[in-house]
Amino acid sequence: MNILGIGPFELLIIFLVAFLFLGPDKLSKFSKDFAKYVRGFNKQKDELNDLINSEIDINDKKDIKK
Image (cartoon, rainbow, N blue to C red):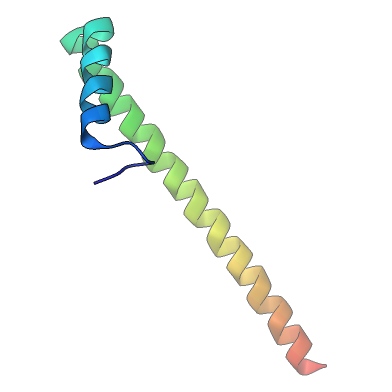
């Protein structure tokens, strides 16, 4: 399992370093906030993708009518 080219061992090291710097309480809050931002980013990405696809469809329909 590779996430962005990072294997499981590297993820474990990153988690341990974050745990040492943030502590258990702040790490939990950070994880929740990070997940919220990732969901928001994915939502915006999907909306942009839908907008681009709809514009492409509109342009294709205009080209067909000509």
